Image 1 (cartoon, rainbow, N blue to C red):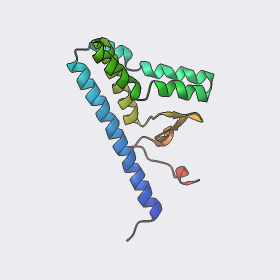
Image 2: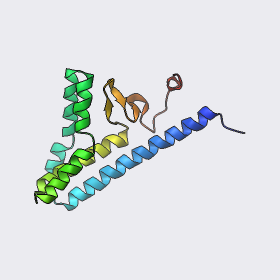
Image 3: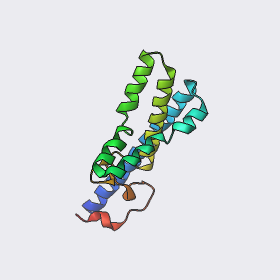
Image 4: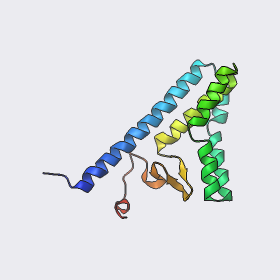
Length: 145
């Protein structure tokens, strides 16, 4: 028996979300491992792990500025540049902060939270937040338009 095309694409979409969640978990795990090998203290890690989420305060100024502020601290480019600067300048604290931020970004991606669109906080590059977690049952409402 052949699957309906909507069922096949829905299955592919679910697998894509699972793969993206696994990728995020791997990114977070590798960053945590590197942080532990780089000699970072766990008090600093705990204090800064959720610091990028303070960028959500930008949403108080509206969704457009909120998305820009949030994305600036949740895109991997920023901590990668910070890590390179830390290596070049021989400042291990910069590398440690970069690894904490990378671990946070991977954690967010593993949970299904992506970069934000200016249309609203729940609109991300991974889809709408309420439909993202790969282990949650999705409603039939996503089939419309």
